[in-house]
Length: 113
Image (cartoon, rainbow, N blue to C red):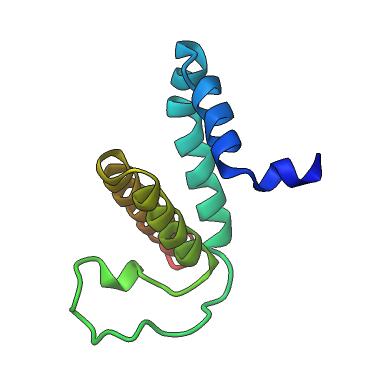
């Protein structure tokens, strides 16, 4: 029985069947992102793990790309979404990344008024 946890095809079949329910899909679509944002906002208060290896001004909003737990989780989620589905995953990955930036922005507004 324990080996079934690692049966990816069975897990995805269950996931697909579970999310075909329109009410469940709607609840996940509306509720999951605010919960994810709340988690990223809480983890934005963790200390920086290091510096990003890019010179200042390389990316827009780079001042909010702090290498902390929030940033790492947002980037990992973005990559996982993209790996799961190229089209919808790219949209969800971009959303996950920008939710991470928004969490860091809000953290900076709260910490340094």
